[in-house]
Length: 290
Image (tube, rainbow, N blue to C red):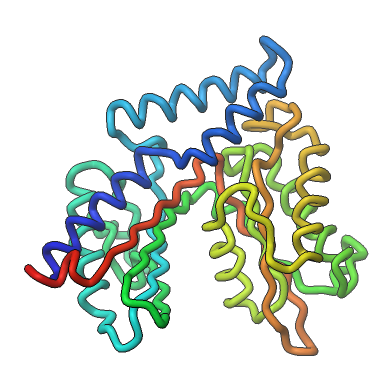
């Protein structure tokens, strides 16, 4: 099982690193077409799209920072996690050796890079069990530059006069994107985690980034918040790479968790324009008969 599954996962990594998803690419094209002919924002988008085209054509990473590997894995009830985890580690090491990934796992105490993208809690795994017979593996490659401009707020937040309500939530999201300016390789894709504790709020803000562009929240109130924030953030005029223009964010996704009465966290995860995420779905028979 381990060897066959690692082949599938290696291809998943390759696709995520070198081939931007169609919905993301279309959003970039639409954003370029909104800008004035010959303007700096239009030129920035044209360069981004040329980069996307070349990465796909030459099967090379679309960014020099291939990011951290975040895996979200749904398994049939009772299936052992460890063979999946081991197969992913094998695939990640092979992808690093063949330059599909840059080695991005560094020991924070010694400063030593493992050279393989394998280390303590690297790659990052999120396992779930479901009442189905297939396996779904979602992979997100999360760049370090965009990770650095993420933020977490605790409501009420006096500097913004943000209270413990959705109005306060929106103030925090706008502040985080405004503070990021052109950093994080704008235009960004914004994931918002509302509620939970400090850890789960961060996790939620990233997990919502797996949604397809245009896929609104199941909660009708949050769906309206997503649309309102999209419009307000794009009115900031920051634009691609901070050059100004009509598109500062490509999408906004919100999620919510119940919270402790004493706590109200709002967490913003910023994804760069290279919103690299791919999905692999397998039946047991696809890999169990080695």
